Length: 218
Image (tube, rainbow, N blue to C red; front, side, top):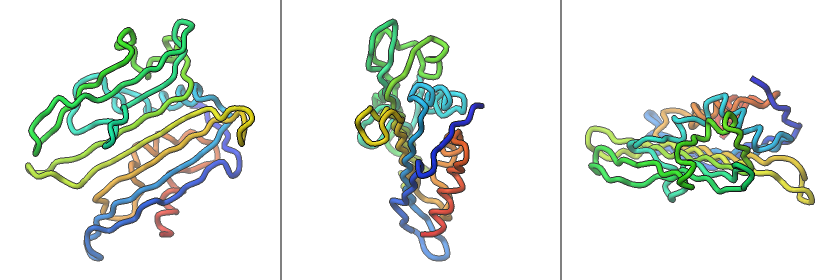
């Protein structure tokens, strides 16, 4: 897998939330972290690299009905992008439509793809299909149920990738903004670690280790 070169100072990590809703002996942490990176590679190249790692795939952008899994609590899509398709710029989205379910066991969501003519084209296949991606974003929110009781456990991951245009600070680069949040953790571990491992494409930057160190220092 190709690695990117992250310039010194191009990676910022902020701990946004550390709350213990358990006890000192039996902690239950809710943790939040924000990451900001800037690289020279284009949003399309990042899209290709993160498809290779599995961050962009059917596990994060479903094309079939799923349970207790949507884009976010505030109705953001699973995925949205500005794409170049057959010579035209199009807005592509995969949203989650609530199909109901038993409130205390599962809520199901049906992925809806727009525009309709691209409903069979999954983002993981864009490179193979010759579709170029400009600015794009991915949102995943998973909530959990336990023994017919609504749990407070959740996992939330968001990434936004956008070109920083000439004339702005760091003109010509690509901005990457990531937010991580997870609840009911028994220690100060990296939230959304499955996702963080799939962001490990930046040469000289150990994101997982850096996030862990920030949390341990709080």
